[in-house]
Image 1: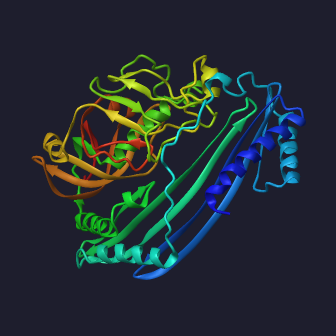
Image 2: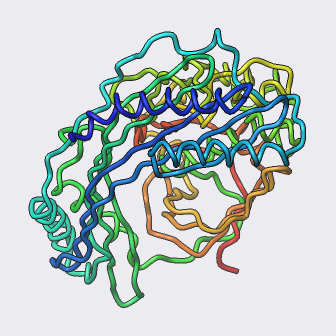
Image 3: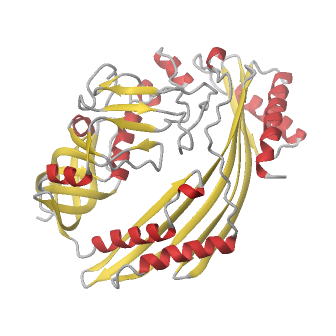
Length: 444
């Protein structure tokens, strides 16, 4: 059976499972199904290192009896296995506490019709061809500079998946998607020691990937740029975060305004609705229905139809990030974010990367953060970092082994400017961000 042909079969299985749950007396039930298959190849020093084929399929079944819920899962879709799994979920529900906030999202909120987001673009890549692409990528990277002496390899992968969700409201939604990627990790060495860096590309369609040459070249250039780092000075300096790290900073904000963090009272932005959380020139906009996007979906993990959301408008928190459950706990309405956000972008005036460096002036351009020194309850932030020392708007030299410290509430409110180099390789689309001065602990 062709992979895509499983979609109709899985939808029918969801109907069958919901019917079984109904026959076993469940007041409500929901089923989540995922099916995936793909190929992964890694090459190191020109030789094939790993070749992996994967083929997975799983069913998560949740049943509700009164105010008690139970969940069980299986990879077996036979009638006997389905019946036993529903029974297992039913037995689990017997031992759970009553929860007045559990239950399906309102039936009127379910996605009313399927939306084709053009996310399924299979790549007929065989192992031999994959090995050649990965080998070319690594070879280009190794050839960038004689100081690149080793490699952690180049990896290429192609995956296709089908997601199906259904519940006892009668809703069953599904879509197929693909995800292709190519990455390269290189190691450089000079008289001062070794440094590692990488680059990668990921897309729904293979023709939207960066070329093997481009990925290898970029990985090589990034690795060479980090050689011979000096110690950063200790003091208070403006900070510029590379796009991948900027996405992480926004991720901390999203965690703080998530419904779960709010109702557990475990957030540095507790009860902050209507308050200023970002500078007034900056907004956060979610766009879940963008074609070919990595975070696209027309329904969330509750089956609720997704829609554009502006969580932060002109710096002011406009909405928490809510599932049906967390919305009930907070006496609010779901934002169709069960399972997370979809294509969250930063909206506001931007400048080029070079202009952002000029505005930074003298300070630190950070490309790597290390450690787990982030307290989501207090907002206290302290992490090891590496990157580049910038003087008079120009990169002067690489620096490492320093720490930046502050508080997330202040860091977010004191974003000075953003670049135009938006990284769309995830669910949060962030550019480089310039932050107001932070405490830096470098050389003593």
